[in-house]
Length: 132
Image (tube, rainbow, N blue to C red; front, side, top):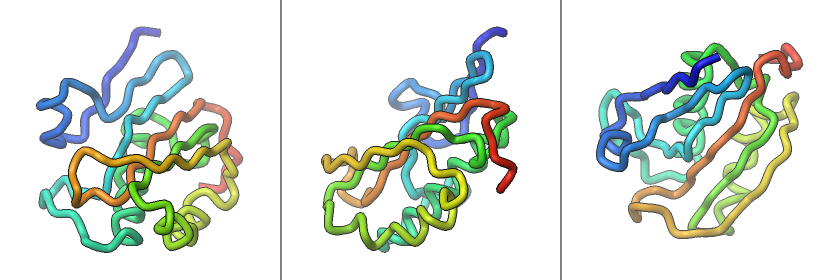
């Protein structure tokens, strides 16, 4: 199966030369995604709202790639402030509670100070548990 790139239309994709997601065979690799609303270009000041919007953005990319959140097998959370991680766990539980992918949380600065969380995922088509 040939490689297929999926774009969200984010200005960052063109500026930095990457795709929101790349589909190769049965795998979907979703790039680090932040909480911008791609339709408005806005981002909330709340880390919780950013986490929710990030997951909405990831869900959209996965669906466009022919996959879903239920097929996520690996997730990486990146936050500048590790103290924010407990604040976003209800959002993560909402999206991944039944999926339970392998996960890593990393504390690191993000590209812009307004970004408070970045999430990247890998999904395998056919690996879903049917919960989403």
